[in-house]
Image (cartoon, rainbow, N blue to C red; front, side, top):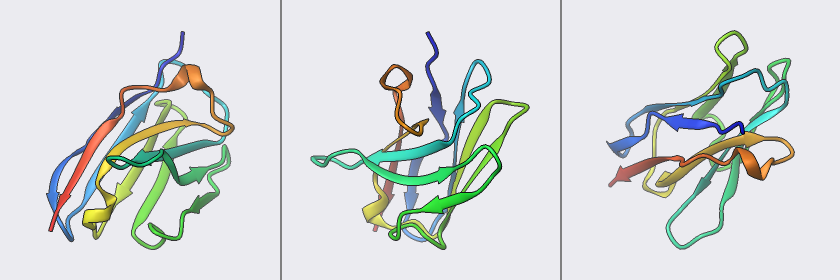
Length: 113
């Protein structure tokens, strides 16, 4: 059973940067996305990247976050710059559309003000 493994989270001050990774054990030839869940809130979509590399972002992260992928390494990345306290949450990756079997443990991102 495939499961995606997220990593790269941590504690950072507002204005700082983090780079998240999402690794798959096999090739997932699909549009991929990052999602996040803030404390007490529902999981929300953050960014999407197609198999050809076209990206789309939620307005709240546009111009600050960059999604990318490495087909050879079966890995998705999320470069997060100019982080804000409202970016705090657990970050997950999954396919588009979502495959519930792919949910991993996520990686915690905490941004202090």
